[in-house]
Image 1 (spheres, rainbow, N blue to C red):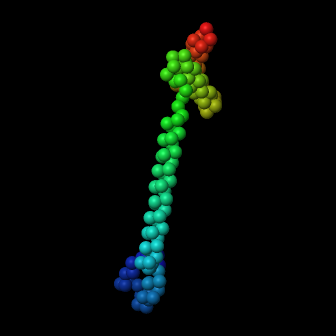
Image 2 (spheres, rainbow, N blue to C red; image 1 turned 135 degrees about the horizontal axis):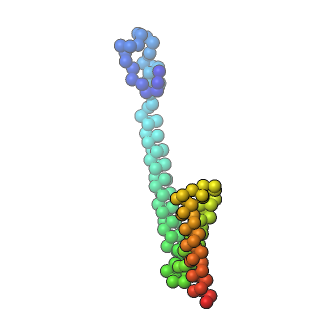
Image 3 (spheres, rainbow, N blue to C red; image 1 turned 30 degrees about the vertical axis):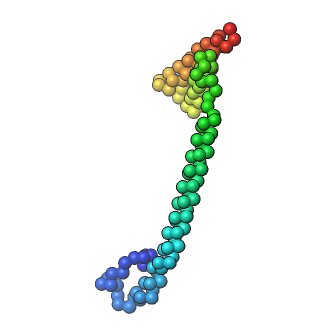
Length: 127
């Protein structure tokens, strides 16, 4: 008989289920209260952990940002880095599929834009 199942006395032979056997399968209110308290404490611990993680992330985001992203010279450096990084990731993940139409165009243009940005950054930075 499943745990906490309702007993239909019409379908069961007389004497096959005793009150003692049925009562031992059900949980006591004290056990239910303990389980509820345990779940409540676990939920509080999870909420505190989420709050601590949120504060940690907010502190890190406040102090860390991409250096000089708004500088007109360093803007080209970041465009170059990000576009070539995208091209390298596409090369690693797609392998032979680079020759495909849409993915190949994205790969080609990411390296082309990156090369152009590299030349502009070098020109502005050093000469």
